[in-house]
Length: 156
Image (cartoon, rainbow, N blue to C red; front, side, top):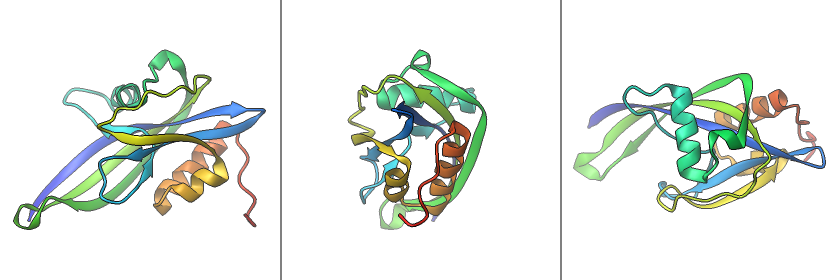
């Protein structure tokens, strides 16, 4: 089996409605099972993590750098492993994703059909239920705290 390391970057985007935060999730079209994710993608050669995150945000959602306000000081990393390919051509991939946080007043999204099939803006408690992986949910909780969004009720 081949082995590969991937470096990606993304942006957790939120907006406020009547003081409450809603977070942007995309339903990936690149995974076998339905998976709700934050906009993210590979870092190109010579590109910084931050520049890659903003480029991926624009490519996947249509949100441009001028459409978002970056929350300074928020940068979180997630690392995970998965395999790709068929039988004899399988590749074990170690992936590291760096996430930034941004607020946007613009909520109109233009999806890249190559990247995602749907999008949604959800309150924190619903977003936490949609995000599958524990580490990613923890990053979302930290993003909500950095954004000044209230944590969900523990009983919900």
